[in-house]
Structures are given as structure tokens and as C-alpha cells.
Image (tube, rainbow, N blue to C red; front, side, top):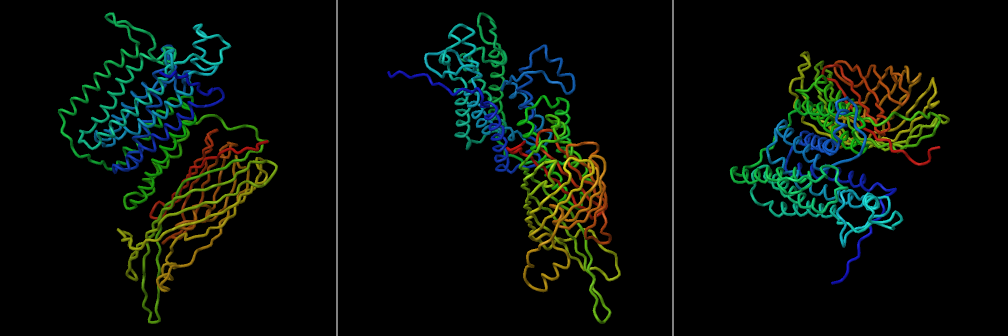
Length: 615
């Protein structure tokens, strides 16, 4: 037989193989889960909350199971987390299973929802195994053929410590690639489930079968894994003369439990059609609040930056989707109903901040700032038309609109120059218009309008910002830009469109914002048509703001807003910006309302990506 040479893997020193593939695995898992949920017709809001909750439990579980016994006392101190980066997928699997069972029931999903995790989990775990293989964790015993590792890797250092190789060796001895075998195991089990997908299965039996087969495979793989590569249960334990690793003794009863559960469910439960649950807004928001409380209790040290970004993105999208859903149900959801999702959205990112903002105020910083968000609102109009005979007609117009989009911005923080940002926003959405003829002297009817017209909204919004001096005490800031598109359909535009018989031409409207004062203490601001606030119902604002003592750019602004509405155009508004430590994330919520039928709600989540050239 031909001799197979060991495979020398590239050195992980100076590289982040584990972290890179870990992030890829988490993102792939979330993307596949969303795709599977879409294919099954699951409602986005509750399904995204369920998948984010399972991901959170998996992350926490991988770390909790690897915490040494003496360090568990630190977990009872809020915000404290033991030092160390050890992880074990076994703890993650336990945490994910418990969270899946709890959230499934809480959100009204059947057992079939657990089966939806099977194939995404298999693909994600296979990707993570590549990172483990390249890094050298979870390695196998020395073998005649396998993979070899470069100096300063865990297998190399362990073999030096055991005297198997000198400290000057070019590489380690060959070890079994147990990480690759684990990846092949999950892909094989996933392939088996895919091949059997046409068979009628009782809900949950797919997941039970997958877990049982993976437990069996992991039990067998442990015979080839080096104890030095184990994070949990590496010691040998002899029971009745049979010596196994501690982790294997744990795997055995779990294997029997899940195997029995699969056998019993497939024998005792008849396959039934899946029932897709409805969204339950209150339960969704309570679930988000519970996850926020958990992340606050664990503290920022419990999560890495990629984990924080994944969790923040999931929870923020849930809240924005919940707010938009309430906007669509305008008859049921007034502005007061939106306070809970918007309030939670304003703190969803605060509980997992990573580090304080940089304090070097003299440095020049450049960023590419990417943003996503949307706006929505409603307003009424009245049109009266009189004839020469003295008769008149009175028409009511009821408007509701929603848009979504994003911005790309080049941002500079330079205390010696006034230029601040150059960017462009792209927005797209729709406006629904109801029309009703009113009695000339009757009340303005608002009940159950029939939205008979539907118009598409879109906008391209280039803008530029200046601030002078940047970082000084008394400062002056200015923003100017243009809006090009179809920004909204007021009553006059609709009547001209109807009389002309053709769509109206593209609109070109200005935007501007001017503020002055001591930004961190108090400042005065006037603006009109800034960003997405120009769409649907063009807004003019005058307000007083404060950075509340912060010097990192965050602020709170409140005052009066003017926009078209019958009977009065005046609203109160509050808006702000939260700069979230050194994560590069910014949350920008805004709300204006007359606490009646006139309101406009907006929110953006932006990420500032540092660019080279800082000096």
C-alpha cells in the first residue's frame, strides 16, 4: 500500500481561525434558520425571537459548562464572569435544548419547530469544526497518520511537555484529526435526515434522532480524542471495571434517553400536520425583555464582540418588526402602544456594551458608517372646494405610510477641521390613502377609513455635514442635502394627478439642520426634512437638546414638530442618539405625535466601521 504522509496544517499563531469560523458558523446558522422558517411559513417576529434565544442559550451554555468549580461563586455576582475562554459544545447543546423547549411553548410553536433546527445546526457545526481543526483544539491521540501542527499550538506544546518531541521540533507528531471526523459525523447525520425528509415524521422526532446519533458518534470519537484537548470531563472514571472518560459516562445516559425518546415518539405518536402559530406581541416583547435581563445579569465580559453583534442584531430586528407591525394595525395601536417596543429598542444594546469610548480627543478618526432603519406614520387632511353657486364639497384624506432603507456615510472626527460627514440615503416604501366625502357642516369622521389608493414612495438623499469646532465647547453644526424621488402624496398632489391623468413628476426637496450650543450640556436645533423624516409627511422641527454630560456624541433632543395634519399640524417630538461603547454601533430613535391620529416614528441602527489613516 502507498505510504500516506501526515498533513501539516498552517500555523494558527497570529491568525484567528477559531473566531473566524465561529462567527461564520453562527451567521450561517441564523441565516439558514430564517430561510427554513420562511419556507415553513413561520411568522418572522416570533421565529426570530426563538432562534435568537436559542443562540443566546447556546453561547452561554458553551461557557458555563467549562467554568471550573471554584469560579462558580463569581457567577452569583452581577456583571462578573470568570476569566478564561474555554468552551464545550456539550454545554451549548444543553442550553439550546432547554431554551428551545421553553420558547417553543411560550411562543405557541409545535414540536415541528424543533425539527427546523436540524439541518442548520449540522451545517453550522461542520463549519465550526474547520476552525477547531486549524486551531488545534479538540485534537486526537498520536497516530501513524494524521495531521501535524506547527510550534506554539496546543498539540505541539502537549507533546513537548510529555517528552514526545524536543522543544526545537519543526512540528508535532501526527494526531488523529478528530475535529474533521466530528464535522463528517454531523454532515453524515444531516445527510441521513435530508434523505429521509419525505417520510412522515411526528413533530420533534427528527431532532430526537439527530441528537441520539450525534451523542453516539461523540461517544465513539472520545476514544480517539486526547484528554489534553478536552475542556470538560477529561479524567478517567472506572465503574464496574470499565474505564471511560467522565464525559463518556455523561454521554451514555443521554444517548439512552434521546434514543428512547425517539423510539417512543415515532411509535406512540401519529404524524400530524404542523400548525403555524400567530404572532403574540405581548409574549414577544416579554421574551425580549427577559433576554435583556439575562444579558444585563451576565455583564459585558460574558460575550465576545461577534456574539454581541449577533444578539443585538437579532433582538433589534425583532423590536423594529414589532413596532412596524403595530404601525400597520393603526386602529388598534396608537402611539402609546408603541412605547414598549421603542423603549426596549433604546436599551437593547446597552446591556452588552464592550468597552468605554476612546478618550483621545485630539486624534483624527475616519469611519465608514452604514445604517439601516425605517420610518412610519399617519396623518389626516381636509379639502374644501366651493362653487360659484355657494355650494361646497368637503373631502377627507387619511394617510398612512411606512418606508425602510439605509445610509452609507463617510464620517470624520477632526477637531481641526469643520467637515464632518458626506453620505447618501436610499429609502423605499408605500403610502395608503383613504378618501371619504363629508357633510359640509358635519364632523370630521375618522372611524375605519377605507384605504383605496396605494402609492409607492422612494427617495435618494445625498447630504453633507459640518461642525465647528469639532470637540470644542461652544459649537455650531450644519447639515444640508437634497431629496429626489416620490416623498409623499398630499391631497393637492392626488387631485393634480387625478385631473391630469398621469403620474406626477419626480420631487426635488431640500433638507437642512442647524444647531448651536455646548453639545454636552445644552444646544438649540432647528431642522426640516432630515433623512427619512422627509418621507410620508415632511417634518419641520425646533427643539432643545443635551448630551447629558457625555462627550462621545450621544444626545437627547426634544421640542415641537410641524407637519401636515387636520385639525392641527403641531406635534411634540423626542429623538436621540446612543453611541454604544467601542462596538461601533449607534441607535437613533425618534418619535413625534400629538397623542392622537397624527404621529411619525423613526429609527436607525448604524455601524461605524473604522478606516485606516488615523493619525
